[in-house]
Length: 286
Ligand code: C2E
Ligand code: MG
Ligand code: MG
Ligand code: MG
Image (tube, rainbow, N blue to C red; front, side, top):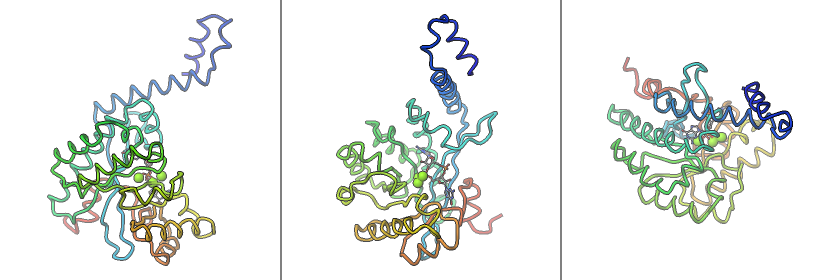
């Protein structure tokens, strides 16, 4: 790629060469290739969802799963979202990809319910570009209708920064979703710039404490302060609070002592396939 970009720059003549920042060309070209691959990937059904259980800290019950996208790339293997969601977001491809995620997550949750698994909420990440789409509500309604899933079993995860881009529009969209019966949570809470006074007006059901505050909970007093502050904030605003990225017994103990409601993380389970969710929650059927 680098050579190709370089070569093309040279074709324009040596005098122009200095006007081409090679890094810019390479990145643009890689992005273009990735965009084409994403488009093909969508057409060829190369995407899949893994599901990570969310656990009630008091009862120990799994009450929800978060859908996390993976790309089964024909040559590169399993690709994590961090490697392609940003480009999908920039190019707008996140809209059709996100649509697929919504439909698939709702379809799968309904299939689990029909198979007799305990009813769970399925949580779907929604990016800024998707959230800004004028037709988001219509898309959500479509996914619910196509799957037959009741709205209360769908939750959308949005980030603080997404909401803060335009609070009034975001609150209106969230209200419309809430009116449908869909729940909303704020993902990666603590990493953005929420206005705490605005937070009480958001129609959200819960806050997800970002895993960057959970990682070093054992040793970092600042992280302990942030985590316990978010938990109290949630209690005072009547919002549930979940900690993400929980890996150790020590973190679980801290969260229990501080009355955190829920947890998600490798301590309980990594993100796993739909089949493995059935094995985990469906009892000893096979
Ligand atoms: P997120 O929504 O904050 O998801 C949590 C991330 O933390 C997931 O990474 C999950 O695998 C990881 N994780 C969970 N528990 C632990 C733990 O105990 N330790 C560690 N080290 N990590 C843990 P993943 O699956 O790579 O997803 C990364 C991000 O990509 C997500 O962050 C979300 O922002 C985005 N994403 C994933 N799926 C989708 C999707 O379908 N649509 C959109 N728009 N974004 C998605
Ligand atoms: Mg999330
Ligand atoms: Mg998160
Ligand atoms: Mg995160």
